[in-house]
Length: 387
Image 1 (spheres, rainbow, N blue to C red):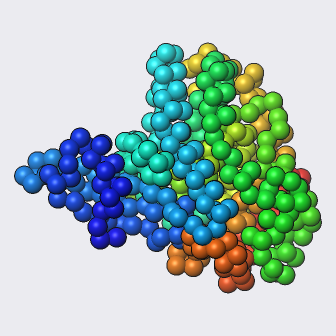
Image 2: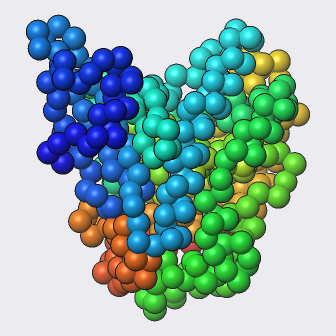
Image 3: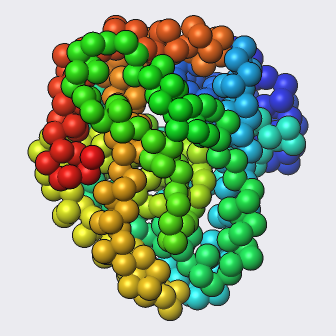
């Protein structure tokens, strides 16, 4: 990308309050267009002619797709994320201030969005030392300690809003578009057909998955319980950034990409994140991480005068894990394909749907390493009676 697109230029001028002719402009580090992402992502540096003022931005911009299904998914995703930052986060901030609660500062700084709802501008987290974890490498215990603590704090905001300001919560709930409703997942038959496309024809993979494939149900993806809240939605390791100290110990975290934010259960976020990034050894420590999460949730709810025993008891978390962790499992079966493949092999979502599915479901993605990861997940589900 050599030139700044006109729509990006216009939005940045609104944000900085002056014409960009006053600055030298440089673009850098773009993602590979369409490589498994729902848009282009690149960084923009603005420096005035005297070198006295500098702005650093991260720009996320939607793609135009040949597939109507993927285009609808992308349009809804950008609408969701803009609403999250421009409205829901503001509601959370007001609630935190009213209760003198600790500010949840684990998000990007949102600078603005365009009127067409196709672009968002954030601060450049890389300049503060944040980076994503290498995709093929499982996250270790220290990373997941921080992740589960952070989700405890983040989920507490949604639960608190629902209990303390039900009208604001309802407005947010009704504003988010459920990406899964725009796919073939509305019915159990549609769910099975859609999942079969993404899993592909590999006999080895189907042998590993065994009866689990026959038990697929839309209930894995749609929450039907009494403890609803608003989830992050798309929380694999590519959408979580970490910073490290001088000895390379993880010290801080940022949650990014809220395009799939929707109504759900905490289990959607936790199982998605855990199963798409944990090693076999860490899978056996699930109960430890659930304890970490629930302690964090409880402490955060207390700031709003709420008790986790009323809002979301530990017993309910474990019950819902057994019922809804299949969402994380099926998401992981898909995501590990992307995580273990080179970036250039990821499907380009701008292409027609059949081409995307043909590429993604090909046996090229079903490596021995991938089959071992899926086998470990299946073993974990069976050993814990989650099937």
